[in-house]
Length: 228
Image (tube, rainbow, N blue to C red; front, side, top):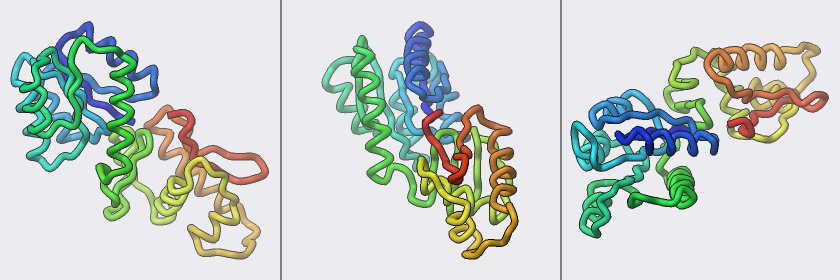
């Protein structure tokens, strides 16, 4: 899961980044509002964490800019502005939650987890798009990105990836893949499934540290999210 952290306090920025990464989040940091807006336009994130008192523009302007671009990524405001009016303004501007500084990091993590979970189950992620870890797939355009790098897949490689993702953390036999992806329900006496798995695995591994496609000896293959 990818998080954009926009916070100009370097000490707090490092603390938040460290604790998020220890909880298996991939974190991009920025100290400026305009830079943060630009990052949201060129990258996809599961959550934006935003300070209100930035050195160039107000955090409220960042929220409004993100929402005006039809970007529905959840936004968590973290701010020293603790008045009720400030919280109301932040939420009405388009933020999803507001956490007052100083805060307990257990509560901070709980809010992060809740926002990402809520977004993934309530339509925050488009139904024609799938993102797991640093792999993003558009089911309509058939675009695929790994860690924001476009990768080119053949038709069968794309269908194979989608089927594996749809059945993530489940062992799938070669026979099942042969039937569901290629429409072949008989023994071809070839290892073509293994070959395509190898092609797909290499294209993904060129851009990520995660071992998504795993071989389960004697049983088949699994798209695993355990390493994310």
